[in-house]
Length: 152
Image 1 (cartoon, rainbow, N blue to C red):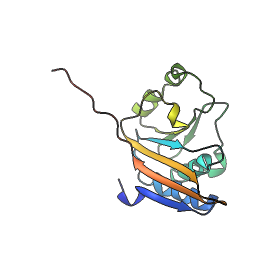
Image 2: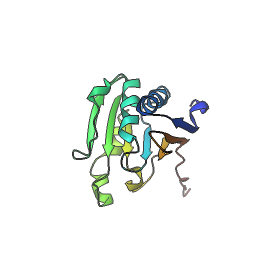
Image 3: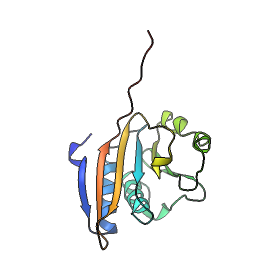
Image 4: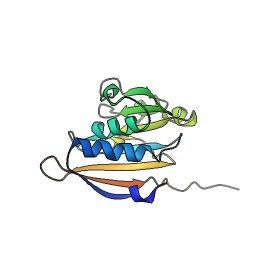
């Protein structure tokens, strides 16, 4: 993992947010999750457009999956773009089969990740916050899952 990506980034517009998405894509491995947080209009789908391009997906193919919940894009690794905005119950998330997608070697990007019933084991968290005008404060951190306890 490129530690230069972990931290606070300032974006002065959509092109900059997409560029950060491309940079993040360069460090992603199959089986990773990218958790996206931010208000409506924060730039989550713009970030995903850049990330997808970094994985070899034409950026114009990317749109918000708000009504379909999950969209698949084929790049250097399969990319699943998940939007949980309209999900009301944790069981609905379980029905999406995200664990199976990760186990099959996909990268899964989740908008409205706060609606996930549990955190993934490996990946990144990206928080997009309004910084005034068209600027965004983008905080990238590693996902840290809670430790598992063995009963040996």
